[in-house]
Image (cartoon, rainbow, N blue to C red):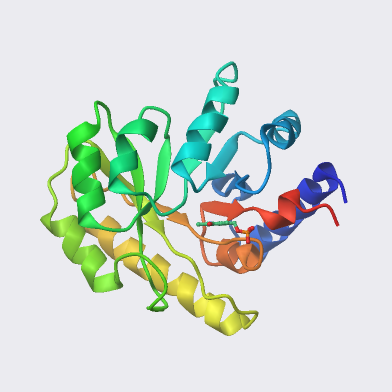
Length: 225
Ligand SMILES: *Cc1c(COP(=O)(O)O)cnc(C)c1O
């Protein structure tokens, strides 16, 4: 399959999942996760209409941003674990941070930023030991306690366990949605928390059914099979 066919197949699946859950497909943004491909591949995706790109390593992120300085309509998403000492380098280019997984990282962003930075709190709904992020109670406590000027919590992000069990996936995504609604309801300044970043190649259809507004898809888009 070509990138074009991959993209078409993904968009069809997004539309069907949106329809099944009576959602507007325009509310679902596809972030192309390009961590495994080079800028030539990204250029092809751009020419197919992709505007949201996601990367997970700070040095590669910066390189790729620099390769596309002429394309000012790209929205750059940082989706990986971010070391505090890398914050300064990527901050000027990052439109969304999906992986705000600890207070010390938020503190560093607050210290370095000169404009608002849209962040997703990473929440470990499945509470797997290997996963980063706040658990549900910690996320709620964190937003209540914080008082940032530049760190804007636009939503929540999670990574589901690596399973094909749909019931587990529904459960995890419903769990994230429940925490999102709870935080949104608090009406905290700088914490709109309207968005849900959830769903990857294996589970984005379930995520869309459960309310994802940003899905992060790599392999289904860039693997030529
Ligand atoms: C790699 C990655 C993705 C994309 O995963 P695929 O299974 O290739 O779709 C999404 N989110 C994060 C945080 C990732 O690291």
